[in-house]
Length: 467
Image: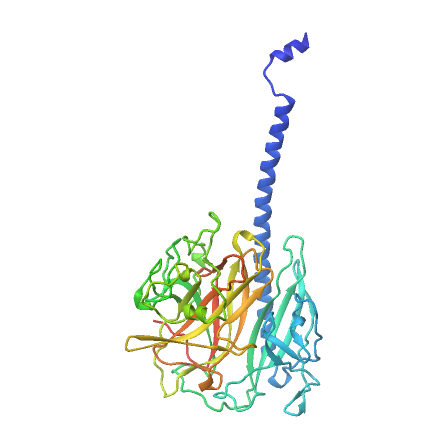
């Protein structure tokens, strides 16, 4: 009989076929998930590049506007949605240093008043202006504010303006909701002579912007290390350059702020904190552990100063990381080179394991000088309300995939009318920490083209320091 022959033959039962089908479908779903994640990451990277190009293009257009016309055609309206850049408007002022409400300055707009005179002739459209680049859609916002001009440069407070351009992308099915990005630039009245201007190095300009990239090379090196060293434990950066590279509780050299961007051929991601392993095999860049209250004196002590003693807490060096520039070269004249009190810190960052949680990062800017073997760090003073020594960036939802955040910097120094002096042989310093209101560590990527974390600062005119 046919039934008997089938029973005697080898074959697959219905249950086995079903199990095989389930395994096949599960594997296919896994592959599709990987492909989908890769596609989304590529799409987000393309978005970031397109936004950066758009921001630069908008700022270049503003550079062509005469100073007297650099004013908004109308006063933009306040928005209640914190995701809307106009939420930073307060009456006729704008919180230019942060989305969390810092750095309030008067807007420059037609119909406004400055020094008793009504402003008119402004040609800058505040927006929002819709745009489309390929499949990318979004909105451009523009702001112009009166900026604080250091007494060493301006005798009047109406000779310096700051333009802020913001790009907000529309929500997309594949990219989700993206935080808006911005760019800022200062504009000096060309008709006004500076009150005091320090002597310049030969070939220097009256105003020059420094860009210094965060590297994984210790500051005792004569130049940035290339090729990079690869994966390694966290550098202890709480000492001085002469201490060299150290790991563990022994204080070592801070890493180097380097004036040259990473080479395009070195775009390989490394783990700079193999001793901090919150996720297996998924770490890239530096993992900074939450390290206490940013405004607390104890945290500031970790951010500045060079110590010879082992760390008081075994995790101290994993909670604050520091960088130093090469020494500032000697320059002609009796007056020091000045940082004019303005700049931008751009960081590539993400949460651990693409988790969703809030985050707050803290930054300190300082000048390190040495005399007879002692090290002194002088902190820049954050002028944004409330006044503090640190600069903070908070996000209710920290980027879960690699993205760039930007901290506008506005700082002062009492003896120089708002500017920060850089004496010969001193070093510019940067310290980063994660506030203790952040549930887990944050990752900071740097030292390769796709992770180009950097600090940009305006100076009174001299090239960035090199060894």
